[in-house]
Amino acid sequence: MKKALITGITGQDGSYLTEHLLDLGYEVHGLVRRVALEQPEHRLSRLRSVLSRIHIHAANLDSYASIFHVLSKHEFDECYHLAAQSFVAESFVDGFSTMQTNINGTHYVLAALREVQPKCRFYFAGSSEMFGKAQAVPQKEDTPFHPRSPYGISKVAGFQLTINYREAYGMFCCNGILFNHESPRRGYEFVTRKITHGVARIKTGLASELALGNLEAKRDWGHARDYVQAMHLMLQQPTPDDYVIATGETHSVREFCEFAFAQVGLDYRDFVKRDEVVYRPAEVDLLIGDASKAHRMLGWKPGVGFKGLISEMIQSDLEMVSPAARGELVSPGT
Ligand code: F7E
Image: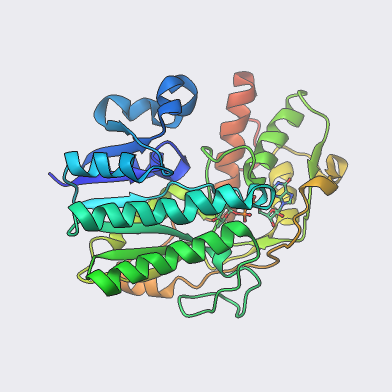
């Protein structure tokens, strides 16, 4: 039985990856902060259905010693490093802690692996935010990076660290360059979930408006459940490499709103208000990925498209805010 370690196991991607690896017969271990263990109902909620089948260890990305401790006690075949401060807007508020967690945290995991388990395969969660002010359309593996936030910069550093450990020490280290990926498990601070949750609250009379920032930004949005499969596939290849994971379609935040509100028979223009506060000091205007290398080398393709993703998120949020609101969707979407 293969053993995998997931940092960031409590997040959206960590929970889907856990389920995927369990289905494949893995023994799954996760690193979580001690504070999460003190509030399991809240912090481990995405793992509720699998909690009895996984192994949780307390560790902190700010502490090399805590990571080293776990890695010296258990042997792993694969390590998926997903933990990060992942909210771009927050990285403008406190760039220092984003850098500390995302860069040093990644370095600690790599250094500890090198020390005690150099044969363990390593996955780094790179991001389309590394492309930032995109130098080519669509973006692929050889598109130059031009990050536009401390978050994007921290991911470029993590990406380069991962390559450096591969080249310098011959470790099996891969970078996934994942474009935006969403689901009903997405955090409420991200725009997709803010919209679908907002739509559900408005539809059920719990709210009357939704305050948003830049509606013109365009993103390539896929489903997180599809994207974690690509992470696993990268670590099954004969040689380590880096891959763009994306749908190849781009839509604006405005289009997302339009379709999401229309799903429950509403017009977004009647409810969406402008909120200056959530505009970013430097915006990433357009992201669209070319995942043809992943199609070719990994046999990976996204399963869920833009409309299917929004329908699933809206349905889930309707059920969450009001169980009586089941079946409110106007059309199922594709
Ligand atoms: O913003 C605009 C905002 O916060 C998307 C993370 O997973 O994907 C994610 O980063 C766009 C931006 O995600 C609001 O200005 C408008 O242009 O949902 P987001 P993100 O910044 O694209 C990448 C791949 C990652 O790696 C990140 O970790 O939507 N926008 N109005 C808004 N965004 C937010 N959050 N809230 C608004 O009210």
